[in-house]
Length: 104
Image 1: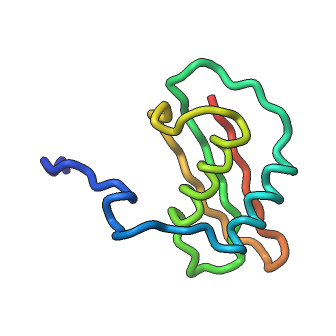
Image 2: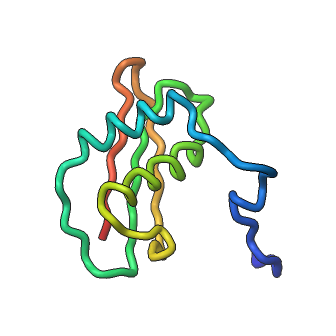
């Protein structure tokens, strides 16, 4: 199905400024310290995210934007150059949550 409408961005969905929570700042700090050096190819990019959740209620799309923003910061790219994404959701035991990714 194709619907003729301009897609709405996350920035257009909220009024006012948004501020990073302490939890997000800590998450960002931990991820930036754990992300190993990576040499990116030239854009356009294809990303593959695999999220391991311990809750079946977790939405597959909620972690994408914050994680991708941290990847941009670490690897110095712009997500406007991402033209294809594959996102997988996996249910794991509590304490075994994970994030796996590739950028091609």
